[in-house]
Image (spheres, rainbow, N blue to C red):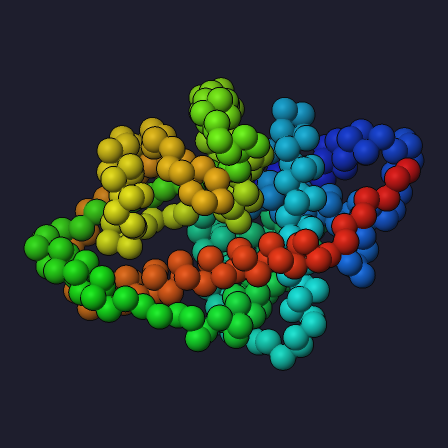
Length: 311
């Protein structure tokens, strides 16, 4: 069980200093996103959620990155919610909601009831965490609604991968984290890669992921959890398998940017062909849907006005 953190006062003071408001703390409009209004207290709550779900304490060293991450996160979720509301007919499973709450709690080695208590101790409405999960579940439904006809799985590739699995008695699983960043100079990304790697050595992988990663895992410090070697692409596996526990992989160049993995642990498991087949199919579907999700969101972002309020 983690120690309950009294983070509210420190965060709020930091937030006030960052925004250069008066000594008298008052809520106020901070930004409009489309037809939605976001207040300073919304950002404070977002920061509290980030700290609680990462089992971190507030410090001045991470004040700016917390503030920036919270704003990015709220903007992205609000744009998604606008699209979800536009459609109106989407649904989510209450079972999936509970499973996600359990997963979030397990990441910091607590149960859901303890997570609720931590939120209450920090004057945070637990429903805000539930709402974040609901948004992602509804967004996934939205992406499936629009792109389900494009979920074509290459059966021959799946069978080839299964043949490789059958030749092994044991399979490896990797506990990994990621950082995905988009270099400013795409023709010469090496200086920025070097800068990111140096920051990782000084600040730690999780903190750099929170500050610089454009992946949705940024708010979790890049955490991807346990991933079976069978569902990792050959390109990624070639880098991950050569990376020792606790170390950072060589960079992988993607169309959207640069990907770096950290291998946190490795374990071996007994293989189950039917389970592995299902994992491969689901992973391939997830990869296709994530591609469409990113593209759909980018389109919405370009169409949505985001205006910060000058004080």
